Image (cartoon, rainbow, N blue to C red):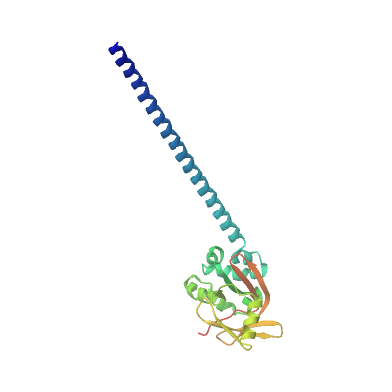
Length: 211
């Protein structure tokens, strides 16, 4: 009888142990499943975030200063100059923001052809970059901002370009006029062309820093 009881206890113990092990296995499987689902959710969230970031980047570039200039027939010479100076990528991909005083084709036509052709040469890329950067200012400055700054500074507002040299802005009637380092002037003929990474103001002359 005693042996029979011991056998029953032993069998029950085995079943109890097996049941316990089975429960532990199920608990571990449940934990593994939750962890796997969490990892998959994190991967999906990252994938969606990457896709959103890529879409935002594409949208930004499609409406960038470079894109706006490329889409404007009257700025084709400027676009060619930006490519020659290897600055087109900056105007396309850099978030900035920037304010660009963009010379029209007619503005570039005022520059002696020999001078312009010389600037476009590969060996003169640094000089061309310097000229173009003199037309760019860090930060977004609308024509309204510029007019207010001129008014606040008693009719004359000086600001520094990306090149590091100054331009001077004044008003002539209701037009904003820029005076460069050489004392030459350029008038904004089309203001506030909005871009994803700044604003463009079309001007009627190429400005030059003091040599």
